[in-house]
Image: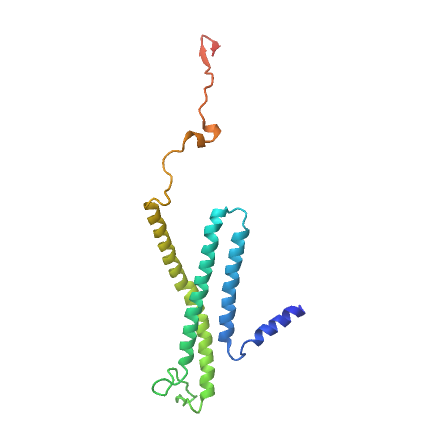
Length: 197
């Protein structure tokens, strides 16, 4: 357990303790990478799949993982930047989100910059969580389905052009199993109480 605790401390030391957003972002991205790698290795090691199936499924899983990670990174980083800017002075010299004291008066940014910085970090952390939810639960499935529909359309187009025709009709007799072949057997008939062949 000592080695695990040491690894955990070393990992945590990479991040600013006052900023949970970067920690959430990196750990979520690492989770996506490890999940995608596990899926890919699982497909590669699956003995029930043929080589042809693996040739299709493994690249598809790698592409799927890349879309997931890329979409998460793109959405979350932009949301975190936007959230942090909300607590900083804009064009008019005032932040978009304003802090108020107990009396309800708006706090000046210059004299309360540390409080606004803390607000920015909290907004950034919320944006990291929101980015994960939006990218993984909403945008990634939409992109994945659109890509899948495009690939199916291309596959259907190739089939229509005769590049990969789907076999139709009955198979030749030589490809049928032996038990489906027609054999002639003697027929037994009852006649006058005697059996005749």
